[in-house]
Length: 429
Image: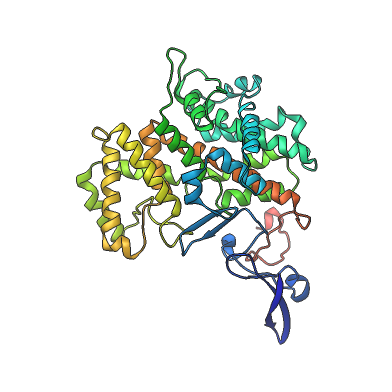
């Protein structure tokens, strides 16, 4: 890979840095030996210009608005595939044959139940606990229930742990939701699809049957697929960093969930819905758009533009189709929040200010609309994101574990604190 080199000149000395060329994307300067040779670190807050690992899973071209899972465009997968088939692809590198997909689906389906003692574990939380707080605790506690899949050096243990998390995270999230609203837990059904089963566990009650609507089922499956992986984002990097220490897989995924909880990451679609509610009614939209355009006003329109995508978010194109289908099914005549969303979307796609700055509605804008229409409270938006991203975290974790060059994560720092000084006795201060 390193067929070229860059030269760094420092204090009259020259240091050669190999230039690595990826299959797609910008070249990378290899600085692994820079500290040893030149006694200097690089400074990159947020690691936004640093490749922290070598990966073959996901590629993003923000300028072109492109997202590839193992080389497959997300638009093609969303049109032709399912979330579970995409899970197999991300984990194994290739799309499954019919027999492989059937086997994988059966294994996931038959691992959706959680240990019965975990039901008691839920009751240790306050009833008003945020579902994400519950998920962090319960997923971390899985290592106390499933001792037979904790050896990260055993390939079969890693496989079993992976299947368990893909299968059980929807059950745990649904249980967290049911607990928060005071309803009894609903056991998974093997006759339902992955997305359909999750909807059933969230909305069914013992008093009557719940029939999964195929349009809502498809929309939920798409939400999961579109959020399955997104390269080395904050939560994925957290999973890799935790995993680099040799931590068990359940602890690593719990760490990822904790990171995802942040409003700048997984909480973006919740923040978007809260903004729509703040706007309140369609007639107030011009007031908030004027505020968004005012450089002196701290107000920001949530759900528009993206840190990575400098063009239209490719996931948003697909999610918009699902949003239109769901809103068409459920109707928005009596929901003021969804009316505000549709009108704000129309204005943003036509207004010169938004178009010139490429502030298009992103995936968080549309997923929030869909989940709101389905009847989920905003507190469940991030747990659903966690279900979706579980496969990405697992795939990245397994790739990291298998990397023979892997090392424990150990970022450096630019120290700006006091110089060495002597301790002063309490009476002398």
